[in-house]
Length: 198
Image (tube, rainbow, N blue to C red; front, side, top):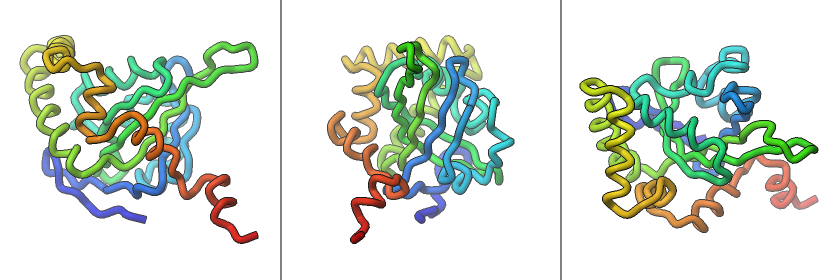
C-alpha cells in the first residue's frame, strides 16, 4: 500500500492513494452514503458508522472549496462523469482523489443511487488543481459560493472545455486512458481470479 504523505494545500498532510486500488462509495439519490469499501476505511480511518447515511459532503476535506463539493454532487446524475476532489481523513489529514461516477438502476430501470470510484490522482495534477482551489476559496470568502461557481464555468468556457475535458486536461489523460485506469483494482474478485494459477 502506498500512503506516502504529500504536503499540499494549507499545510496539511495528504496521503497518496495506491494506484492499483480504488475506493468505492455508494450513495442514494439524495446523496447520502450507503456503502464504503475496505480501502476507503483503510485510507481515511473513518468508521463505517461515521459515514453511513451521512451526506456525501461530509467526506470532503474542509479545505476543498464548497463550489468544488457542489460540482461533485451536481455531477452524480451523469453516468461516467470524471471529477477531482479532496477527501478528509479521521486524523485531520486528507487525500486527493480522481473520481468516476456511475448511475445505478433498480429492476424497474429507475435510478436507485450512484457509485463513486476513487483512484489516486496523479501527483502533477495536484499542484494544478490546488492553484485553482486557492482562487475558488478566495472568491468564496469574498463573494460566496455562487460567485465561485460562475468563475469556474467561465474559466472552462473560456478554454473551450466541458467539465470532463477540464478534468482530463488536469490529470493529463484522455477518456479511454481514464476508463482503463479505473478498471484496475487489485482488490476486485475478477482481478484476483485472473492473477491466480488455480
